[in-house]
Length: 368
Ligand code: NAD
Image (cartoon, rainbow, N blue to C red; front, side, top):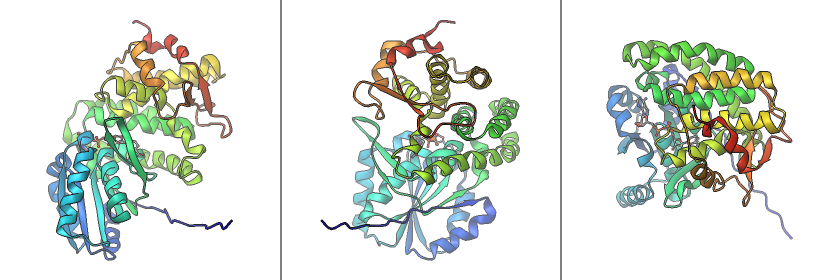
């Protein structure tokens, strides 16, 4: 038997702040043109800023305005855009640029990976959630009748540009959703970051008043925390880019979280569902897997204060149906990824087999 080893380079360059934009110009010198996929709402809010950025490419570009958020991850939209763009003629040296939150980076990444067997993908994430999670790590996805993210590829972006200027226009709920994944990363990898995020709670309260001017000044305080949180994800992804083992730890809070999202018909924002999902899974950790009581209390009190305005409750039978349907589950058993304490997890044993009935006794299904 012959064995052929194929290597694929999947390194991504991450750039921070507006001072890094000349690198965008340098990067674009290798392309013929740019296909820019932009969230229509983000483009309208930040139009001048974005036109300035795109002008730095010094090559031709065309902007495709995509529906806001999840509506962009549509299989028919992918088909129509592919046909439209290819009819005009497309060079293999085109690059796809994403401007938006995780929905846009997922969709445009999928487009980039499938179009002519792979075009380069450059991302300008515009939400906290995309900066700490969706734009990192090469997962792309669109939705179909079977559900959310059921069609997807691995396609690591060529470069990601993290520009804090976008964040000032996020609503309090969008910010909270991003905080959900940041808190998750801190629980997995850094008790220090967890403490810094706790101190951020007061700022978050101001943010919710949604005075845009003051939000722009608060961005300075969030952005360094965003960078710390994304480092934790990248360290895990680097060790296991294609999710054979270690990367599953990033699913902490997601087994319960995905079930809650689906049950709400995706009205509940992803990161907020993850905040509640972590709370629920930690209750199981405390009861069945020796999760340390002191860490439990510290984490749960923070999660509860973040979730205060959401008051998420659920019905167990509906929840259970979605829980056992999750992609991570093997046949009928339910798997959760559980840290072993604040800021740490055991690489060899973080995956826990769980009886779905154990969820029935968590605070999610208790009155009051
Ligand atoms: P999103 O992209 O759906 O955006 C949420 C909303 O915020 C939209 O209405 C959008 O118009 C608006 N918005 C975006 N940027 C804004 C800005 N700067 N100012 C004001 N409004 C802005 O949501 P998201 O939370 O960024 O991402 C969620 C998506 O990411 C989901 O589809 C999820 O499946 C995906 N995701 C992917 C990965 C991955 O690894 N690929 C990881 C996590 C989540």
